[in-house]
Length: 140
Image (tube, rainbow, N blue to C red; front, side, top):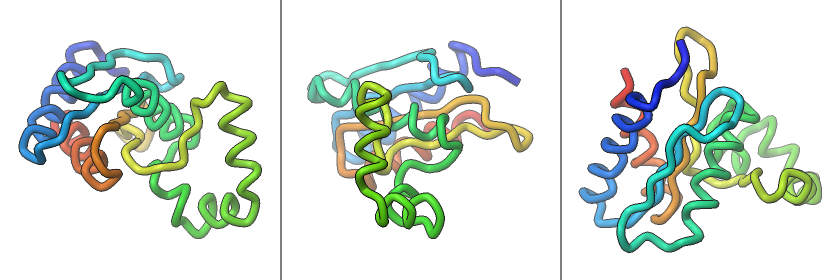
């Protein structure tokens, strides 16, 4: 299965609904399995920088096939980067700032295969994650 624009629109609509419920102004990004943009949408009032951050969170999730916040806390990737923080910095620089080790990015997994990713930015990382989770739920 590959993601369609219709899938992306449905997910973004769910993310916006959650953001409205939480009272935050976010930007939402949906990328395909190769990290290419399908859809990016910024809510009125969301900071301009949230566009790049949402895309970066989704890119990180699809590139590493894991949830963005796990960069900070997992026993594998997170521990590795905490022991070598210069590597996370180097990855960010070498990818033009696309790698972002913060919550709000999730891979989209269907039948055990990563088919894309979502990224959200504009609230706290917990609010961003709630919006991203709403996006994923809307796809099932």
